[in-house]
Length: 337
Image 1: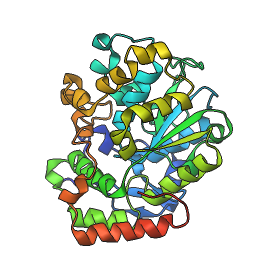
Image 2 (image 1 turned 180 degrees about the vertical axis):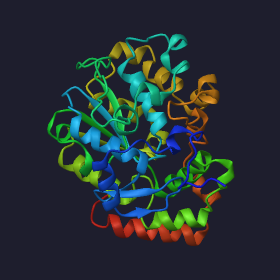
Image 3 (image 1 turned 120 degrees about the vertical axis):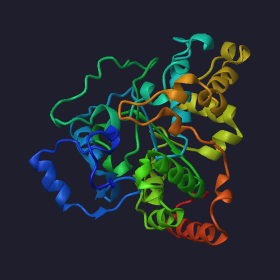
Image 4 (image 1 turned 60 degrees about the vertical axis):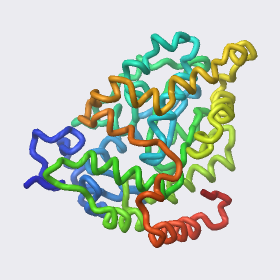
């Protein structure tokens, strides 16, 4: 039987190890290691990453040169990333693609339109083979759009020092955990079976999850958003769901493309939200049957997209334990869920 430690070559790419350089192998051996939810995790700069993707992280850190007009979406996994990618792409390109009946989102998954820097663009078998980013627009009216799951501490210096915008999306940790548990089980081959919720919950509470600890990740961007509000916009998934129009306008103002009075009169805000709604995106053929380059099925990114779904999965004891951990970790920061 195959296990996360012994992946045959016919496994999806996201479960296969890439060819590692000797330098990279030495680094991997020096890092703390844990059995992950899908594959082995290694702790780098205080956060947990899959073995396959650390080389992409290092290449991104070393080679990416941010431009002042860039907009980078940041999130922990399963915080509503797919939804916000669709929203940001539609927002920035609303004059380029004014007709919702002929929009790229109808035929292309949001993760393709707004790729991950460390997971898509900078990951390959040769750490010195760099991605060609010339196809990405770069202007104040049409900025380059990228995404990352990296914590603030691990961002390249050019991202921190440039005038580029960081849009951070955070979600209630209980819903984040439940969504991540479902998602990682979808990524596991059937022969491996499911991770038990109890085992996954123990890991999450110890901070051992993709890009975890959750609280350290959130706090890093929360503090930056307070110190540099012109640089970092901190959004909550729950606020986006409750007041999508208000938060869409806030996002548009932040990235420098506010809605005009004419656009407001033409219901452009409502049209963007309708096009990017969970119901609309999840029912598209491309998101039902397509796959990413890494082998991940598009449908794996669409489950329920609801607030408070954790009540259907966590016991009272589990919820209380996680609430207590988060309260202790966030104490004094002003960040609450």
